[in-house]
Image 1 (cartoon, protein in one colour):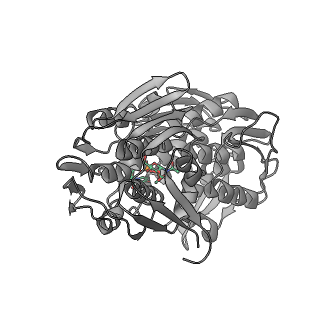
Image 2 (cartoon, helix red, strand yellow; image 1 turned 90 degrees about the horizontal axis):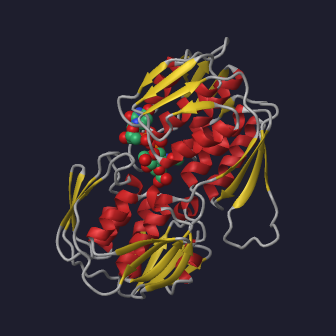
Length: 431
Ligand code: EPZ
């Protein structure tokens, strides 16, 4: 198993290209099931989650191909993937595949909408909490689906097709909004989604569906209205830049000090996180080519943060921000409001010398910790990268184990940090 070795203490200087967003690419790929025609996605990140989803979609009969390199294309350009679901040959998504990637559960919606049936394994719990699917099933039922749970599988049927309906989410859910959008696009009549997720990845999916012929208004607001159509066509769509990758590297620069241009990054996708970084003493400027992040001397200031649905501070940046706050010049408080168990990084940060006290869903970070390198490992993607950030500022050597978590969501992490002067190296083989 690969590991990453980091020797801390170097400021970051240079530029980092930001990849396409994992959490947009995955639902966009799943939307290919909605049409017999070819969906072409550009700027898809090179990630193991993308490869796994290609396999999962292949199991349903979707042909997926990655285009070869094009003239003038750099190593950092995202990939172009074509997906063609001419015939759906299997409407079952088995446990072996769904259990490896939670987002693959979302295939239930396009399959049900197009084929009138789907049998998808329940995804089960995961490292950041119980993560139920009750709201996703409620949304499909509002569109006329009949749902049963049978031996760990959700069996959804709509033999006469889905019908438009009124979906009111009691809690903001990104996945729930994705699947409601996909299902309602092919339903008969009008669907209204209230308390919809406003995350940029939801808007990106809606924009792609509109290119495919869907009639959607209000994506990016709390109310989305969808007028169902009888069929969708193929389309070309470019995946938006990854706001979580952007925020992660911005926090890394805030942590080590330095001056880095985050190429292709869009400030409107993560304004709340950038505001918090500014409060912590980091200089952020928007440039034509992206976002410049600078911290040249001066203390890291403590800032209290509570995670919230977009446009609030994202839960997917909570662990990284906590790493930064361990070096702040005073105590801070971090409140996780989205997932009940997303503090698995706390004990690993403690191995590096961080002093953090947990009380329910609040972490009290003491600040001013002197971090020292150590072997660490994490149980999920964002927790893993928070350890990388801490290691960049720690004295001595840190070995981050279970690198496969990082490979799920961060393209070429060690190359991107390495070219800005970080001492970071991937060690292959047994760990
Ligand atoms: C998406 O997960 C992201 N995943 C997550 O990113 C992200 O943390 C999360 O949204 C919140 O922003 C992808 O886009 C692939 P939710 P999702 O439904 O859609 C509760 C990462 O690291 N809920 O918005 O699964 C749920 O338990 C990942 O890239 C229900 O109660 O999240 C949570 O408390 C991790 N019932 C809250 O809603 C349901 O049926 C928000 O979850 C569904 C959700």
